[in-house]
Image (cartoon, rainbow over all chains, first blue to last red):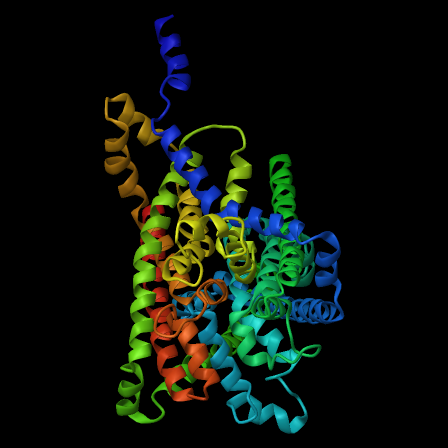
Amino acid sequence: MSSRSTIGGRRRGRVLPGFGLSLGITLSYLSIIVLAPIAALVWKAGDAGLVELWAGISSPRALDTYRLTLGTALAATAFNAVVGFLLAWVLVRYQFPGRRLLDAVVDLPFALPTAVAGIALSAIFAPTGWAGALLEPHGIKVAYAPAGIAVAMAFTSIPFVIRSLQPVLEDLEPEVEEAAFSLGAGDLAVFRRVLVPALLPAFLSGCALAFSRALGEFGAIIFIAGNIPGETEVTTLLTFIRLEEFDYPGAAGLSVAMLAMSFSLLFLVNAIEYWRQRREDRS
Amino acid sequence: MSRATRTRVGGGPLVTLGLVGLALAISLLLFGAPLVMVLGRALAMGWDVYAEKISDPFTLHAIRLTVITSLVVVPINIGFGLAAAWAITRHQFPGKRLLTTLIELPVSISPIVAGVAYLFLYGTLGLLGPFLSDQGWRLMFSVPAIWLASLFVTSPYVARELITLMQSQGADEEEAAVSLGAGGWTTFVRVTLPKIKWALFYGAVLCNARVMGEFGAVSIVSGKIRGVTETLPLHIEVLFNDYNTAGAFAAASILALLALVTLFLKSIAEWRLSRERG
């Protein structure tokens, strides 16, 4: 009897101390640093009046920036999906000299300040730069064109795809592939039937995170974009310009639109994660 | 015949060589070119010009402000990360998933939106603006505003690393220590901290890199006052727009070196982490 009660006590009685303090610090900090400013943003946006807010969100210049930002972010994410997959695959699957160095270097976009990336990319793709001098004679304009925006977005967000895929690739059981091969399946069939289903959730959430980062990017883009309204002006830049013009309802409208987009993508990532966990629980 | 030896997708020698070669070539262009460009341009006119550009008073001030900002922001986010990880991974309570999502939230929000949000809270026309100016305080366009915006942008970095690691470690050792009569603080310092020090270091290194490089949020809340609220990334923009390319790349080279040091320290932390995991 006595041993049973200690087992019961072990479950309930031995709770670690510091719960109130640590949760208190966490909640206060989040409230002050993260939630209060976001609440203020939504509040001031409502204060501006729905009509003015909508005018800021739906002005022709704003619509142009959405089209450009979404289009370039999609292009950047498509590039990152392919190249990010390749890099993650190579890093996990093969042994080769320089693998450790490559593993460190793929995080460069997270370690390199966006302004530095921005001026470097703009120098590379300027008509006189290394890549610009090769591409411009063939009529391919990157710097001061939408392509440049996509390049800046792709550079700053590619680690999201790589780092999401890497742990899942490492956890794949070699036996599953072996079994499929022993049943006579070819490389492509095993890839499609065995690997793709296992990797898909992590791949999708990595792409969603990269896409989200691309939509919100500012520092790397403004140096290479050229920033011409209606042509190479992204939403973050227009928001910044609205602030400088003291057009607060305009800035609030654009910020709320971007915030809504962020929340939708965050919801999507969480839904993918939930789906993955449910599938894992079932198998 | 070859099928019998094949055990993994893409394991053939030709495929291996092709994919590894392709990955290395792309990486060299994607990651190598920007680094070489920055360092090359910074030193293009020789060390003397470089030294002169770096020792420009505004550049020196920007460096100092960026370092001070990091010294303020990183320790605070270490404290927050430790508290959040202790609450989430060592206790059961309702709403835990929501709290974890809230901690991650700033990662998905554009720094520009963060800057606008701070302006609408503390700016003269913001929610707390009238109250603050009654007290004679002006928070926006000041150095503390830079610290606040940086705290927002980097708050998930330490917390996320610690939560992931401490979740996988479990609370058994802490519970054993407490059951043997150790106090909560002693348990934390003697049992938990040694187990998580490399994850803490890892998070702090990433946090530091982001603080020193933050551009969007800081460019809104700082007001970009030259020699007062101009951090190093903002200073790079000013120099670049003034057609002072040599100065801009000299300043950028400092941050590029910071990035290299960050990658190096991060690799050390990752190596120690994987060794401890066994």
